Image 1: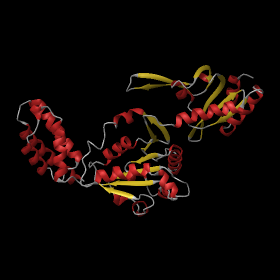
Image 2 (image 1 turned 90 degrees about the vertical axis):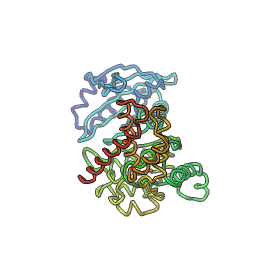
Image 3 (image 1 turned 180 degrees about the horizontal axis):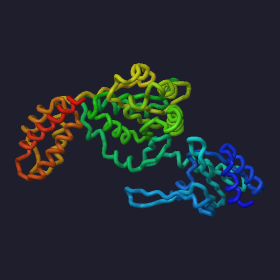
Image 4 (image 1 turned 120 degrees about the vertical axis):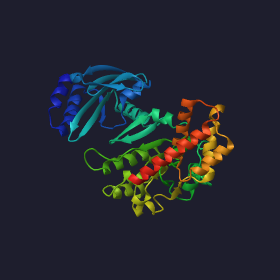
Length: 404
């Protein structure tokens, strides 16, 4: 029996019998070869080959099942096999890998079989592929719709966010930097004294006051693998299974940063207990720094907000004070061309008149001023433009507040 016929016979079977049928048939077809099989999501053979870790040759495609994808950002296409057999050359050895995909209830099963001369060789190759795919290299690991994806583009986008270009009040910036840098530097001390080497950090405050910038700056400063969760929601089934996936992967990658932005929208009444158990239950979370943000702390359960062992560091990001607004405007002003810049007096006036503004609203105001000036291009006109745009933005803010 050829493998193509074997697959054709297997796919119509009940889904819980497909893997067994193929495994049994492969053993009969290749009695002199050893086999490693499974559905481990980290076994991404084609990604491993694209990086030059091995070479693969597509030997058979079943039912022409090769998916084509389009990368709109880079204007290019790429293909990925769903049901295929590959010949693999790895470390001067030749292996065969069969990859299959089928539906099982609401889920999709991705299954693989590795055939080699010895079990040790097949197992070593399996481990090498999984290890390589599990590493995070100049990319963020993003969780959404129940799956992890590596996102190098997002990693590059946040590289410009540093603590040098972050304006925060009092000692907040230094407190956060010192806390987490000291944590990662003190691993041996935690172990010596038997203290769990984990940390939960909660950034609290109204939107637009620097929480997201702080998270990005921490990713760049600490240089630890970063896992970013967009949602725990599952299209079918409970969110608890996704919460489990997130913490399992974090434990594998640790030491790492686990980012939970807008925690109040991620955790709800249905998944709260499961989330708390993963965060602070029996499983060890050594080396995991969980950094969560919230604009609405009143929506968080007291078990999350007030239990120290879960989020033992809470930092509050209040609306901007006068000195912070003045610093922010001056930093922005220094980057402008000379003919566009505000005078010291104009900066002081603008800082005073923007009381109650978040950094996000300040940025919107300053960008609006720049755009308006570029239409006029009149030297010395920026103070008047600032006054006009400030009045317009205050009206918009007032209307938003009324609608809310």
